[in-house]
Length: 253
Length: 274
Ligand code: HEM
Ligand code: SF4
Ligand code: FES
Image 1 (spheres, each protein chain N blue to C red):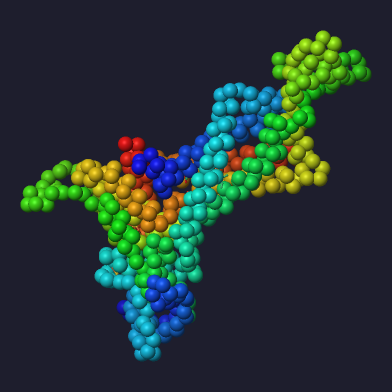
Image 2 (image 1 turned 180 degrees about the vertical axis):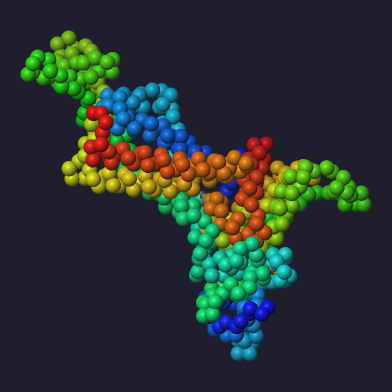
């Protein structure tokens, strides 16, 4: 990119040796960062500098680096996935920052997402919520029915698809003042509740997923709406309302 | 499991917050209609309303529901807030929540606690006097019985007048004829007088008025987030939601504003009728 230039930045980054140690914010200086590089490339550059200085590089999560896997995280300058909207951290670019900026980089903060090392948190609590009910039971012994054989209302199919766009990154939890996972769980419940295939197990699904969510130590929803704004996939608060309806229906049974 | 889920689960607690919160909104509307008599009605109208509120059986039932709702809403709200604090044991070194949420929505517990303190002092100042105070004044009028000679009368609930020096009091409001020793009527407790004295008090009237107005400001912020939030908690989020949000904002501003105007009018004497 022709408009790219190099900037010098200061970084305040959370360092923590392992899950048991205490951890603290450490300050780093990094010069000659191209504004065309991504945020994670900037961290790679910092890690090279740290390795050259014979210090431990900073651990952070990432995988696809193209905004689809949900592996990257990071609370940057007080916001989940940084100052840009509708993106994951791997899609954040250094052109969002100015020469001389001080950038805070912290891990997701949640009781249910304990820090493993530096900026890496353990998000297996999301997996356990999924395992509690985020599926449909189908017989796969050779006679699976084609999903398209069941007619589905277009509006429901679209809404289910939008809910299914959730990549399980955990930004909703990280940004919520209550560390609530309701946007994630709402999306996972909605994705199935809207489809005929998902209706069969709808009641047990929502009861079990919410029970698991509570057991993992996530907070409650105060409807502040922060999650919807910071979610990289634009998951709507409607999904939380749908989960609340499903939960009420299921509890009355 | 399903039954306890409605009480103990995160979502169950929110249903109760929402239901009690919305019921309290209805209560506010009713309470406001009564209070407005203080500036638009006369003393008798207001005292009649106060008597109705403390004696009518249906209203009594509603008022018990209101007490229960306040207690349940406050206890549940505090429990939720404690749980929510526990869900983030380590705070962020740098946090920018004003980029994604309103300050009212982030401070519901603080706003609610101020409202709770207000409700308790408000009940001590007015409700307890109306219910339990032995020295609660009764409504009287001075009528000129002969030219140049005025006499004090009690106004009775039956719509008549009883000369003050012809009766004695029993059970706070029963009027007993001093000669015949029979009950000849019942007087009104003068809540109107108490209220005016409170906000016109030489020393503290202005402070009470200011505190009252501030408390209504806090209530407005609580409702600015709370009203629409309750519907989301109950699972209502559909094509009517934008209209509902607008109504909620209007409710949150107009109701506390009208409440706040009353003590201001009393203190500064902008009263239509006495
Ligand atoms: C007339 C008085 C009150 C009214 C009309 C009222 C109304 C409401 C409403 C409608 C909500 C939204 C419920 C929801 O999000 O589902 C709410 C939330 C809340 N209220 Fe009140 N409230 C009142 C008094 C109080 C008091 C005395 C407290 C005491 C602590 C309190 C604490 C809270 C809290 C903490 C929340 C947020 C709960 C959450 O995390 O979602 N409120 N209120
Ligand atoms: S709802 Fe959005 S923010 Fe939350 S986990 Fe899914 S994609 Fe991430
Ligand atoms: S690394 Fe896959 S979404 Fe960022």
